[in-house]
Image (cartoon, rainbow, N blue to C red):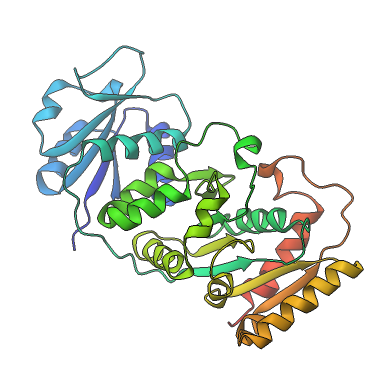
Length: 336
């Protein structure tokens, strides 16, 4: 299948290069990216290639571009004055992440028919983080690992806690969350890869979908439903790793852990924590989930002198150095 193109055009070469590089690395969308500083080269390209979307800077825009065989055109506005009549204008001077998300959201509003899904063919490894012990730094561990992996690999993080606190810890407001992704997976699967581009957030290079606001929603979804969604993401995005920050409230938790490439369980050394861990391991064996126990690596995290105070600082300091070793030994060095 021939992939459709998203063309970028801007006379500012450094800006153009940065935006194109971001979109190519971002993934989670069905487009091949092409960048142009020269409008004549853009015109020649669109005459020979199926260009679905053009994102053009105001400094390069001219009305006759609307005559080109391009399905959708959006303008990166520089002056603050509307350009191109009713054409969608997007403020050029904001982060690449916000621009990309706005482009995808507006694209989905304007598109009526979607091309068949394009399988990218990458094998996505799922890493599960789960502990029966509470307040053990599981989310800190999972986010640190995700951000460190994201330095060299396309990585997606999903949080399944009852109260993630993301809305309070991270800037901005989440208008959509993982439950919206499930809706599109159920009702508009052919549009899911496009929708993901408009929902995806980024934390220090790590992609994430905002967690469910109301935890009761999670309890309605069974493991086969989640695994279907994960498989769809694997087919239509280019993620190498998916990190699941899990809780006991997830239906079919053990079945999800069974599908993980690696499971990390954070422990504590107090009497109650050890008792909970023994009970959990006993349940794995009695319910024939011994394979989950075999792929699980248990850790008692050392006491760190100081933990980062912000989520985007988790790749620095003692904790990060500790988790880097875990990645080398237990992710890269694990045969599965």
